[in-house]
Image 1 (cartoon, rainbow, N blue to C red):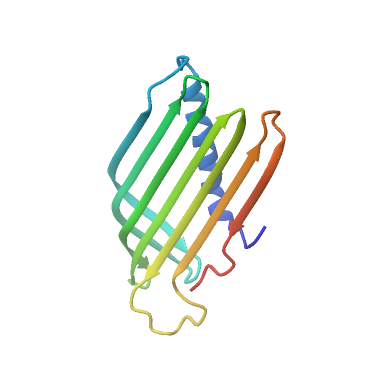
Image 2: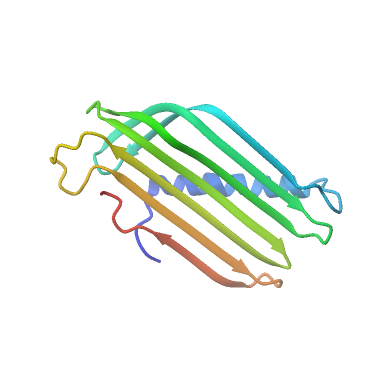
Length: 171
């Protein structure tokens, strides 16, 4: 394991895991022997609030959240799932500095269950603070990346597991 897992991001991970469980349960309940490939894509207005751990300020803004969900249950029983939720290019304001931020925040989760099981989950958050003045020597742009991956064989035994995060969230 490399890097640091911030407790604030851990809450997001638990939220995503709970969403994952609900989606899998929904896909399995009432699913016919083979289901057509399904996809849901939606863009909606979104109010974004987060803490920039590099500056200690709260940032808030509005923009668009893009949501893509793709699921498939094949005739041979393989379940495929892909979820991508991202906020890209959102402009936010820092409180109390009034500085403008460009925000990118992406969550993706994908898994395949076909005898063996694989799941990969990614979170990327990048808050780019505009108008640097050099007062924050360690950096004022927050960047966090976390990726988890797990593989289990057909008997349910975990054969691979990894968690990766970045070491330097302030840039």
